[in-house]
Amino acid sequence: MKVLITGAAGFLGSHILDRALELGHEPHVIVRKSSNTKYIDSLAPRVTKHISDLAHADGVAKACEGIDLIIHSAGRVTDHGLYEDFYKDNVVATENLLQGARTHGVKQFVFVSSPSIFAADEDHVLVDETIPYPKRYANYYAETKSISEQAVLAANTPTLYTCSLRPRGIWGERDYNGFFPKLLTALYRGKLKDFAAGKKVHASVCHAKNIADACFQAAAHPDRTAGQAYFIADAENVYVWDLVDKVGSRLGLPKVGPPVNKAILNAAVSLIETIWALPFLRKNYSPPISRYSLGMLTNHTTYSIAKAQKDFGYAPKYSMSKNLDDLIVWIEKEGGLKKYLGIKD
Image (cartoon, rainbow, N blue to C red; front, side, top):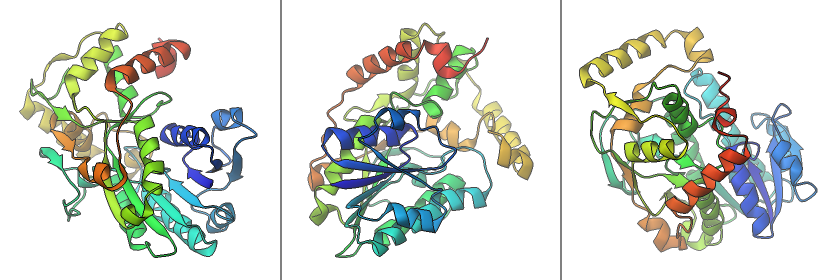
């Protein structure tokens, strides 16, 4: 099967590409001219590469020719940028891929969405797919991912099967820019405090290999998954701060610092978000912390995977302990922690 993968030059997309090759598919990737394609190029000639920005409809349409399945994992996931940036990279890109799929008779479309759509300053415990879309969103990322997901599900027809997967807290090897390496950097510098003030924060996370596997499992059962959305996570939920300390200990890092007073923390976040409302800062720089990122560290966020298990047999086969071992080994192969995190001191 010919599979077009977006985001293959990045973290998750590279794992989806790996899985496509393991399953014997013929992968195609679409990347920007400016993308770092070192990993993709290392897999040549087994991968066909198309050069185009996903916001350019003609280039996207051309890449869709002869494709059987599209797995769309690319998107703007940063914590800064203007609304139009997020809309272009998330919504317009998705619409162009859907149109390319319709034009060239692509049979299936799997969209990698996010539970961040539902992010709120409250606990979410074993949330399932009956949760409604919110009336207000936590940030531009959540809003534009929601618009994109709804477009994908609405595009489902008897000739184009579509579905959406919502992996929570993706982690694993080759993650250079995500939330996990940012936490490790803060821990390395001794700046990571216990923002949860001792609360045992329970969360779902999802290893990149598990969501990559789920993409192909969902595609294998279009009769059940067409027009549906699914939460995807590892088999084991984690205690966030215990996990950070465990990984830090394995890497020789200091422990998480003492609890931070909640009132002081909330006041600081409010001040930062007021300052970051300035367009220049919002467009070009990441805030030190946001209410969205704080919520990831202080609120319970667990999701039920029962629907995915029932509809397409999702069974996360990569365990937390084995994946942690693999991550530590990979970091060492990368040249050690400082090189992996890009720390110069």
